[in-house]
Length: 257
Length: 288
Image 1 (cartoon, rainbow over the protein chains, first blue to last red):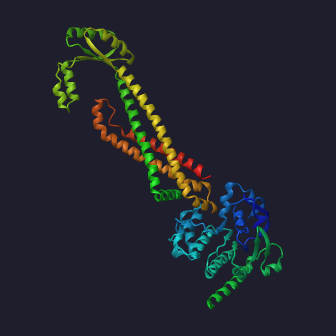
Image 2 (cartoon, rainbow over the protein chains, first blue to last red):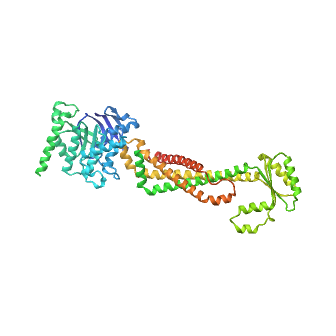
Image 3 (cartoon, chains in turn orange, purple):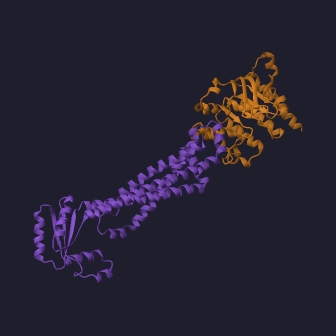
């Protein structure tokens, strides 16, 4: 579970990136974070992994109050959260395999086990044939997949995807969303920041809209919203069917084209 | 052991910086090795002279055999003498020939007449050399007296000076190599700033990031120490025949294998310390 309680973040320049934001995201939810550039989506992600500290307010991630988390516990927190960064943050002098292997190495997992896990994840995201390539040799969609694979390496409880479909064509964007949806169907909480309204509409998931550092709307999926009006997400049991319906719809549209 | 892989990759991917670091370490350990040879060698020379308390008294050419015999009895009566050996002019020539057998020009120039006869006197204790020497100087048939106390004190003064200069130079070179290595490793950290930031964001601990840089520093130190020691030892072995003839029988060379290995061991230890200190300076400075 992720809880932000009256969180504000003021930068040195005096501007508020976030202003009194409160939200609860339950375990296993798939949540879209939408809003214009500079609205504070990335700041929320950075606060969750404690890359930034809030100016005021509390943040709880999986029962850990991270605003009070000591520095030496930071790596343990980050190993539980897989992040797909907006700028991907791949190591350009390392191969696809080495990039995905890195979090496992960082976590001190034995070599053979780490190699096997890396191969499994690469096959899951469809990158096995590209594993010896360097990031510069890959297309935009493949790079996103590498970033997703790396985020998945430690089987995290939470995935934060910051604009993972930015600069990608529709078809590739949907492939990425399907991949994240599959990950979510296995119980991983996924928070995806995006501008892509078509994806947001078609997925039928909870949507949190942010503008100028404030939450202006928090829309639950229809069934869930009818059942529970509080800040709660869709139950994991209802997700796969809903997702498949929307994704199949998209595929049909693609085929027609 | 994964950090060793990272270290090897770091070294391989920036060969010129690695070469600069290894060269400065090689220079430092080369100087350390040479000074170690000098200090150990001169100490052994001093020990040699100290263990052989000897006075050599050279007789005038007109000294009569009876006077020499009388002087010998006089010396023996003091009770301070452990041995006394008469070296005649012919004996002196034989010794001279033996010492300069490879130089026929020197042999041709010298005859027995040129060389003085002498007494080689050993005392029981080093402290007695002075009084025996005084006694000999008073004798009318003795032209010159030399005794090891002079040699020992001159050598000790030289050794002390060498030791002090050596220690100063080693300290200075160590300091220079520490700062050069710290700068090189610091440059590498700066180049990898983005990678380090990514590693931090995906949960790398501070030690996961630091360790490859520290082992890199130790690696440069170890390679530098090994090369420095190898060059110095090879040079010593190569120069041993010339130095042996220069030292004329003083048993300093050939250097013992144990001694050379002990020097290597000490240098390896010092290399590790230097490597750790320099990389730590870089890590603390650039990886806050």
